[in-house]
Amino acid sequence: MTEDMRAANGLRQSLEDLPGSLIRHVAEPNMGKEDLLKLWFGEPDVPTPQFIKDAATAALDDNQVFYAQNRGVPELRKAISEYASNLHGRDIGIDRLTVTGSGMNAIMMISEALMSSGDNMVAVGPVWPNCKETVRIMDAEPRQVALRLGNDGRWKLDIDELFAACDDRTRAVFVNSPGNPTGWVMPREEQRALMDECRTRGIWLIADEVYIRLAYESDLPLGRAPSFLDIAEPHDRLIVINSFSKSWSMTGWRLGWITHPIDAGEAFEKLVEYNIANPTTFVQYAGITAIRDGEDFIAETLERYRRNRDIVVQRLGAMKRVTLSRPEGAFYAFFAVEGITDSVAFAQQLIDDVGVGLAPGLAFSEDGEGWMRLCFSAGTATVSAAMDRLEPVLG
Ligand SMILES: Cc1ncc(COP(=O)(O)O)c(C=O)c1O
Image (cartoon, rainbow, N blue to C red; front, side):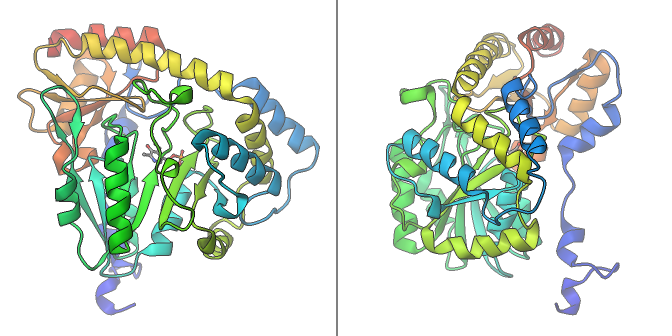
């Protein structure tokens, strides 16, 4: 490490340069407030279902409390392989799967695997900041190509702009679909075009598909979003991130997985060893039950969120100061508010004046300034009450 890569406290300069989360900046001082409708974080509305908790308890009783294999216990990798092969209609073998200690842990390990000083990663944004900041930790540069809202209320990606943002130091393109905060779902034809271009240029494609099971306008079986795994070949330089957090209501359990080419398996085995040694053992056994028996729960969750989305689209979309992007997936409404230039200050104003906690658009990059994110995975009554409170300010 050279002198200029070191901060005054002796730690890496890149850590000092990392921005803190603006979502937390708004939320933390206001968490204890009473009568506040908190729609700022991306969390499911109901706790983990009992049958998954029971599986964790049984695993504890069975003393699944010791170290396990780096890449996940074989039973979980097999269960994920069956689930993914069924979902994508093609064989996804366990040699392409590594279990991780959450989607976030996967994002960090992928940065460690790909990024060196001077490299860059081009992300489609606005996007959850964590997807890009890990690149900065590795002294590489996150770039962003912004989606634009069309007159029909749907996001559009200019794929040529995305290709133009890549250069010979671009190691990866990062796509999060369904997207946080936009609710954008990348159409199949664009996935094909991007996959082809990445193949031609030898650029890795990182697909964050943690919201794949939450798609509201899908004609695919099980109502899920299109996935790069539907079209990729096993040797493609593609890494797909998945998580138990959102679909199975398991945000606090910290469990996820990645799908990667077979020959990347050994590297990820080492990265898991040096990051966490292995994902929590008894949690992995709960994961087996979640993935094998969780389909009814996912279907119910999707219907509940669909109801909430329809309320938000109808009511927020009708408010005069609001330009709403139509959420096609995930569980966020991202909207521009006429006349605001400081989304952080506006978030505080909404908390103080009407008791609704939202995330400021600036948290998701400069392109998000003037926008707000509302998470509609809360209970339907809470979402409706938030609409009642927002109407006098935004209507
Ligand atoms: C786009 C995206 N990717 C990854 C994650 C990480 O999920 P987890 O670390 O809970 O698995 C989140 C969480 O909000 C997210 O929004």
